[in-house]
Length: 229
Image (cartoon, rainbow, N blue to C red):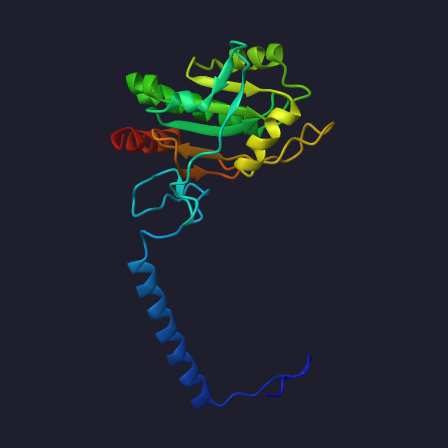
């Protein structure tokens, strides 16, 4: 089959255009039918569009093979208390995972505020939920810096800001497909997502990447996870 050279204008007959338009309409109809039938299937998520046939509001569902997978282990140090933290101890409670650094000038404070508001909107149910923020800047996210950040953000006790050495943090970054902060660049892009983990420690959805979300919508998603315990 010959291919028109660049700069040449291919000619079409009106009959050929009609046949092509009909074929395109049929293709669109089939695509819409498939999309409607598969509304509960895969959704890359991460844009706040909500997937899974209305299961989530703020979060998108995860692709097949990732949804329902055990969340990567998180064993680090709680920057607030200085004690060892193991996400396995959260079994029985849904939790949210995100990645921050204290010198972040914009996205991190926004995510922190939205997560705090989410917990506030949950009311007494917040006692059955945890937020796990993992540092992406081990050099500057010291315990003192983290405590200052938590006070400035007015974060409640359910908000755990975890720190550690690069060697300790790197497996968590890899497990959640996170990018560490670039040394010396406070405005470098990093993975700005929020993962939803159910009470059995399984990945269920995510919000991202770097977009603002409605705390009320995320609170509703957390209530969904609480109802499924």
